[in-house]
Length: 318
Length: 318
Image (cartoon, each protein chain N blue to C red):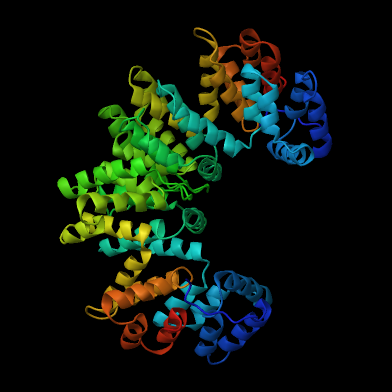
């Protein structure tokens, strides 16, 4: 479900590193950089980075930071990074920004929208890159207060079971617990909700949410969306989506980065770069159904230049 | 600081596997099993297990379970396991036993008394062996209630920073927070305490506890020990010890498994098997200072037969 296209056979890492070197010497050839890096997988980009540093004694990432500018630089450097290190960086930055609610999205995405093993890799990358651990920084972050903070800490600390096993009886019981807290008592981040959403496996949670809808007539995300002004409901909905249908969440991230006053390039870049090798194809389909337009059209309408170039390359054919 | 002795050079894994096979055919030769497995590192035992299964088409662990009995079987099978899988099993069993306070010790040990990377390995092993994740089972365990449950969940979910960096200002501030909760308000598992103890790196916590003692005249573990009847204080003290001086905790586990009515073989086995390759030498020194006797003497006085044999082998010269 990746959206990028990769030539087969691809040039060797050394050939790619040499082509990149040519593209950054003298006047920078941005299109060549897009053409190379925009069409390589994470594993290939990692090999290219090793080859590049071996040949030219300078990290590839540093070269991109030195040679590029503005949103194009932001997108290219994020894209060139190892996915776990990239998520660690996104989380690190999100924890240090004011006006935190939108930034809580980033933490929820990192914690919930990838595999349990990826989250472990992100936590290791975070510890390697910074003088603290991810959950330590979330727990100490002055931007968040309980119960949201507890919820975020538990999400970023989770290592969910990766198996497909589902306990139907448990799903029924926990659907009732969720309904009791969310719909009846309007406590979207009640202790039991936090426990269930932060610890159960994704297939188990899917079964629980299905029970919820069957028993109570309305899906839990619809109930939560109905509570428009309730920030905690919005956060829980984001987690529910990231856990069980991340394409819905990322379609919303892209759309909301485009509508409204000015473009929110940071969110747009984050969504496209971080999902291009995961599920951007599904995000594009979801986008069409929900917004009656395409990601491509919206990106073309709202961006320009090389920045648009790398985004469209990652978005792929549509 | 491992207490076991390993021959140099050791026999090849295949030779060891063949010797083990001989020792379990016909009448079991328990002493031969102790002689081989009791003098091999975890890495060597893993290689032997691979060789054994390759040669005889039966897992080594299953052979030990089939051929041995009673506490000797318990100790040998635990010892033969991969350390992360062993801790996962200990935690799994601890979560399913009534009279849970002593069992909470096991969870705290697993979470705090080894490296952050070891805990990640334990959590992976737990998910592989069982149909749930470690923190999921702790969070859903009916034996524990908040705030102890919250504390345990946070401990088993942690991935602390592994670096040596210490922030002195932070240590001072958090020592004051700890004192405010623990000594002044007598809330040993206050939210801030849980946050600090479950998320900060071990060197940072050491610095914080040093500040605590310097500022308030008494070490935090002494203050907590003073609250004799307070279960939460006892749990926090266990965590403090496991994080900063696990030898104190395991000396206490061994001692309390030996004194009192009858021997608590399960605890004795757990302490000796799980620390033999970590810090049992330090535990023995601590034991001498604190209890004016040696681990060896106490084990000789309270155990017998092959069970005593494997324990003394793991305890090593004294």
